[in-house]
Image (tube, rainbow, N blue to C red; front, side, top):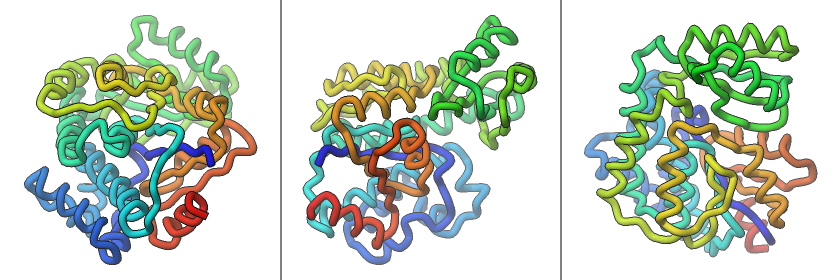
Length: 313
């Protein structure tokens, strides 16, 4: 079976995610405990008990989702006997870091520390209320790019996530995002939804964060990927540690080309997409990117068992 491992990004979190795995499987408990130790904090307590406002803090959300996703993968491998050998891997924004852990490019404890810092730096980069993001539905990607260019010629607002045909997220300074939303509606957008986020992710306003990350990258040991990673910034497959570091740096301030990434994987022969982690956001996007694909999402014991049977029939 040709399959891809996919990992969700920020927005997939919910209080209590992964708790059933923690309580049922030693390998999952080990992952949560390792995250607590790496960060010198009780991340697990926030994940399982909340409060929700704390879990939504970017510096907490990012390591929390990564931890839950890796716990699900470890259960598949160590408790359910699945030898994971995907054709490739991918992750949406934060999820790309998780994909690198899965492919053994980074150690989990290093990556969870890295995304904790990434989240904190993102929160600090732009004062709350100055930046904004909004999801536009019903316009082609080219139309969204045109709208942003028309209201923000100096890239004060830009397309940030090309999620699926007809769904593009824009990001930038709040006043320009507001102008772009109005212009998009005039151009025929069916819907525009402001996103409840703490910073304008994947915009040029995140360039200072990228520079901090690039410097921090040197603190960790990087290896080549065990399978190709289809990268957000380019929708191209990379395996070498050097190339992955480069595109991870660019990802911080560049659009997430998720729709192109799904098409790239499907054109390469991937027929099944396994989403490991909380929620099913990516599964919905994948289905809209290419008809006829098999998509499975799992973050609970029963759904992981379904994936285990599919991979090892």
